[in-house]
Length: 92
Image (cartoon, rainbow, N blue to C red; front, side, top):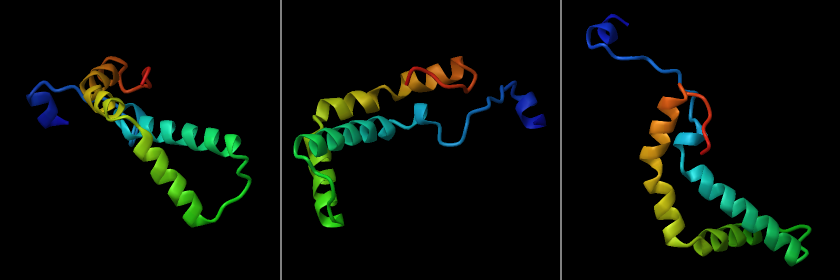
């Protein structure tokens, strides 16, 4: 704390692994939504691990690269938003 005082740094409370600073959570949300829609549309009620893994890989491959790029590019805005909110949740 003394070292922080010397350099006039401010200590912020940020929760462990905040989803706001973890863009992969947005990608996981897209995959989850895709898997749910596919299961409903194809009337999938059960599947083995290999079948599920195949669907997950397919869902990941269907995500357009520009969505991934935009999600990663938003990281600096995410950091600014978390700092501004004092470490609390943001719109991300």
